[in-house]
Length: 395
Length: 176
Ligand code: SF4
Ligand code: SF4
Image (cartoon, rainbow over all chains, first blue to last red; front, side, top):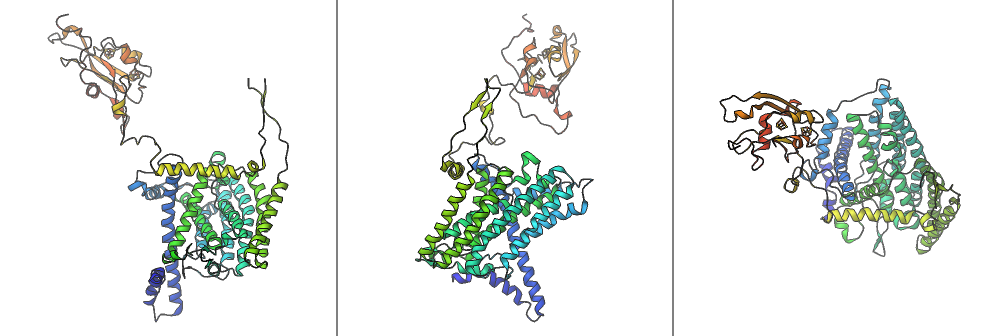
């Protein structure tokens, strides 16, 4: 019974395709791909609209306000109003801008963000595009975001855009490294780059109690935290929204964009956030697996979106809590702490594997991470003498 | 004299910044929870809820002309308010009261009395200076319009806002 609900979308798609029996193979294939693309866009654009209003409301509640509550019930139609507003706004292109690059940047950034969504398994048998090197594809395509951001900054011919783009490039490159390297231990342990195989490897429960997700191993927990922080940076979220820090450089690379192009940047940012969260879940949080055996009657895609929702809540929560970091602190953190820790995760995963994946492996890999963490924090604490803080004109 | 502020010595726990981040997350979550449970007092939702019933008596809203018990516009077009008004919001065209009128001895009345509400700063000088107690600041504050011309209150509008004022000086009755 539960199985039929679980597979309802897969069956629906097969039913749709069955009307094409008799036509040549490539027609069926193209139709199947089109259905996948349509579903992806429909689901994630709705989610984008929903999250854009929920984020404002949740953030408002953390700051003791109400947030948007005028348009429709509880302000839920706010995204529609915003969309109409964005559509009818004048689209200004600066006279000195590089018109083609200026136009292509939002197109590229949105396309890239949507492409990355394609390889994530959303439920049992529900990966839109099964690619052997899915993880590799994700990172390869995802890093084109940098190019789009730089195109936006360069094409606008504006100093704030340029500064923002430069900051974006700096931070994205430095955090792309830990992001990819923290995905490495999972790939090593599973022995596959296919997202489906990675999710399948996290099935089952230790002692019938704790799900066998990688986040419950020492190296997995550390890698998950590192991955999450790098993901925050990659999706330009507070506290790492340095490229578009309003108080310093207006809106960074988006300064010269208005109307629908601006909305496209916004959408790409959110979709990138969904994609990174989706990948984090696939790698560490067991993808669409239920957290307990009895809860498996709930369909797998529901679990996927429950987990996605909770991760997005954490994103918003962090945004509501932490102030923006300084760019130099951020770069120091990336190169001096995140990168060595990411490599440590790789080593810890290897130790875990060779020590027998049991309690012994658990302890050994925990030891490796603890030692490196302590050593790193001692080394990084330079004990630098800071100049005395003097108020010269105080009475 | 310059003051040197001592830098606090951080122990290793504080230097990892993690407790501070966790504490911050806890604070925002507490606010979130309290809001959801309706324990937080939030600002007034303006168009639905208004201060109107609790405005103090001395509230300075839109200036308005008042009539006395006999239905006479109390203003005698002396133009003192026009002169005192700091942003020059008031414009008065005085007219003469015909000798047949019951109040002929008042001599002047305002033929036109315009207050430009875009200019008015709700200072209350006009009310203070008026020798006839003819102009008062009422409690209307939501003054809106689609054009600049809409925002000028003519005599009718001023009288409508002002209404009738009872029991102030009655210096133009027949008895006096
Ligand atoms: S309240 Fe002040 S600004 Fe307004 S009309 Fe009277 S004197 Fe002029
Ligand atoms: S409102 Fe008062 S001050 Fe102004 S013109 Fe009339 S009588 Fe004079």
